[in-house]
Length: 561
Ligand code: C2E
Ligand code: MG
Ligand code: MG
Image (cartoon, rainbow, N blue to C red; front, side, top):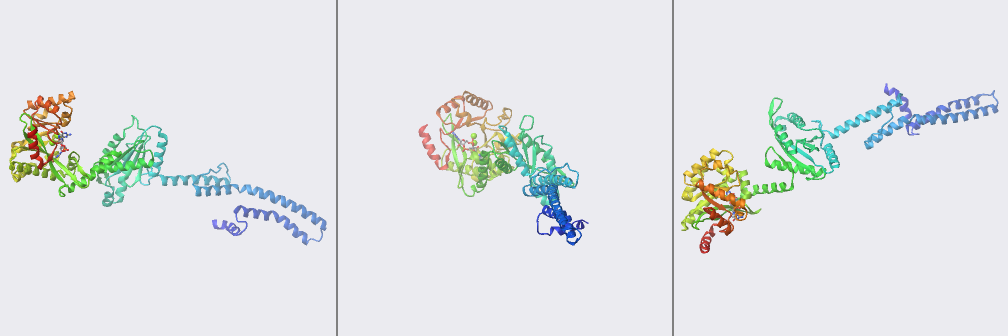
């Protein structure tokens, strides 16, 4: 039917000139208005009754009337075609520039309906296109593009206010997709989106970046809304609750990276990039956790990673060695012990302090093999010195918390003592209060076992940890080591002096031996002697040195004292 309707239009549209549709309508109107004139000319040509004068005057009048009629018709048609021409222009403009130009909607006839319908259709089409390009089809949340527009707006409106960007990375989506299917993966993302939404407040923008990333823009960092930390904690907690998907229970974890405008960047790109870095940092910690972005933390984590990498080969590459620091008995001036201190000269990183790499070795569990190596070599060295005729002394070895907690600690020590043939009386183990944090009773049992074997136990860095005096009397230990931080200012800072004095009298009342570490000058030594300290260790006597320097030390030390 529609085709039939278009028959005449089809025919006329094939006329090459004029090309435009209004032009063709004008041509039809032109021909139409000339029909009376043509009819009259034909009639005059075949008529013999009318005088030629009358014919000419009739033709002239008709010609004039036709010309006037044609001009008026064409003029009126030109204006009547305006709705079609305008509609076509608006459509073309939208296609070319995606710009909506409103058409009038107050006319009731077909031309008016055409304009009104076109108007509405374009508006709806525009909404659909906008939604498709701004929203995530799976969750219906804004996508990254729209989110970026919101951040840009937040930056423009921020003035001097701060806002937070919280980016979440859901763990294990890839795994779920490949093991349980994409359908379950999609379901998971929808449920996760729903959970996150419950923690957002008015003014927050939640978006899905595609894949397993979500982001929240929180512009209201006021007292009434949760801080980014509180929000992150809530999110992590809520996401860790098991999810039930198609009768399957799924545990979900996430990592969160946080950036704060303007500190962590003042452009959309920077803020998002740094949030990504923060997520990366959170991932390296390998926990269900959040992480703020900061260049310092960034650099620090890179360093930790490099240490972890290189530490694996440190033992086999013989990059580790042990230095020894003398400990002097104040009453006699004798060398009564040395502390074994680990040294690492890495080919990649240069010299790395044990204060830096020991805690990292703890995390990676490399401490087990490294610790055993130190224990073995320190005992061996002590035995060797004895065999060389040096007066026997204790070898004090640091035990890290995880080393202490190892199930086979006692057997390892037994074996090392047997292998090195060192008398148990010449071994001391230094522990720190942190290992008492978890299971005090178990720690006490292990310490008692060690002590019963004849090994002396020193509590290192005393005063910096929890220093709970209530457990101190229950602890099977022989020595308290006052931390260097109190010794440094002992002669100048009355409160440090008071603390060290309190530690000394506490140790005396518990009948413990008391050692001060970090003694660097004579004033500190005098002070500690007057307070009743038993043994001292520090640069005043000697820095830690390699084993072959002990004889030199003893010769010179005797000379100086
Ligand atoms: P720590 O056990 O408290 O060792 C004392 C630290 O103070 C040593 O640092 C020593 O060189 C330093 N020191 C000693 N006297 C002075 C002084 O007069 N002035 C100053 N400024 N410093 C002094 P080092 O060798 O860098 O060791 C740092 C920490 O690394 C140790 O603290 C210990 O906790 C740990 N560590 C070292 N070797 C081992 C080891 O074989 N195993 C374990 N688990 N930890 C170790
Ligand atoms: Mg120590
Ligand atoms: Mg110490």
